Length: 482
Image (cartoon, rainbow, N blue to C red):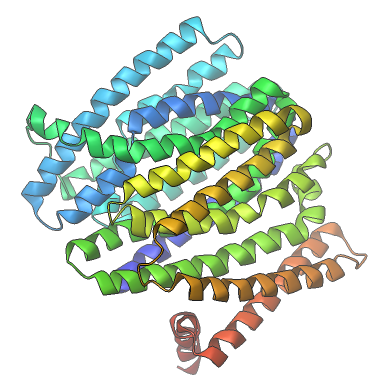
């Protein structure tokens, strides 16, 4: 448990920084580049995202699971790492060639930005994060990422000054990712070495990798596809509105995804050791914890959007207010999906259930996009995303029914947190009626909402002897008593 707490602490620290970064860069870029230029970046990055997805297949989750399951056997780890990495290199080279064909024959607009986006594919050649996730060493990945992200922010603020600087912004963003991946090779000898592997051993990884890739491909349809279809069926301005609104919601999702990243190797290790009961308990604890965090953040964003969005992005982005509010349910829905996927379906090797859920969501999203985007633009894409995520989440929960996990009991608890969130919105909107400086108003709204939600939750935990009182509150109380 101490190792889990350490990794969660490191991952949380990194995600907090990841949250703070866009709070600095997003409003700056909204003003310097404008909605149309950001729309171009969003559209071109959505195109290259399909290629990077094919390059990596399901390697992040599959590689993490494989490395975690060999435990401390160095020879076996060397073999697993080398065979998966060779497969990754081979597939990525093929995909790079395919992207070159796209650039030569199919890319007609924004050619320079599209070429620079190709750096993302070179980054895939050097992406060995899955090795460090598998051995549960998050300190290396976190410290490296923090340094790169700070440098990225500094370069953006120093070099991006006008709409014509979109190519500089693209180069900074993609170059930072590439450098971040390359640095990991300095630490590679600690955990693995390259060894000669047979073709049969490499081939062994293809099918299970593809099994995990199919749901990732489907998931992209109701995230990346939204941006692609907005660029094709609407305008770059609408794409820019969607990009900014989506970013507000994606920022806190980083924290939730970080929890899933930490828990996947831990759950894989527990299951490989046949500790099913301990794994189930950890799964349910994490699920309730994610519900608390995601509800608090989602309701909080919805509560302050009227004041925060115009202040954050500046003039001309009022359309983002409603889009952002529509997006907020994704935090809870996707939070549940991430935990079910990384802590149950993937460790239990239930990839087929995972695939069915996201394919179902992707089909719904594709249909809804075609219907709503031409009429409603970014708002239509946001509505389609929420519906698709909900469909996928319901299907995932349906696939783990009847396993004695106590899902229904947990969902009843979740409904209570939803009520607390609604009350928080009412209180925050009452605070919004106060006629004070906009910055001060947003600060007061955040403090009021967070304090109310925390106090009610702590009271509930204490009255019901909830485990989160022991996990969160008791250590704090003990520190104050010392």
